[in-house]
Image (cartoon, rainbow, N blue to C red; front, side):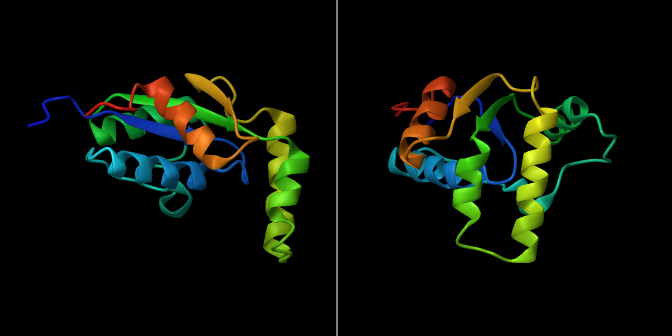
Length: 141
């Protein structure tokens, strides 16, 4: 029986930084290790609690709601890479997302909330491994 205490990670970053893709890869790696896990994608669920504009308070609210320790890993990607990622989907919404990403990068939205910053400028598997290494989640079985 696994008696380790559950812990969580919140992946943050601007739109197009690869949060969902990295999370899915991490879930795959945890499954391969036989580790129990749950994946919640806040792009679909939104933020927890009432939005106050205070991202640090929102992170604390998520941690309290989950009832477990939470680390924050911020993924960074240069704007040209985000543009390239979004190029295959040329909808008006994607153009809006790109403008929002550019504004968020310029305003450094969310910077300072993280426990670690990881560049997502290489294959998703390598980024997921780096996040999991930081968390101590690789090879825990």
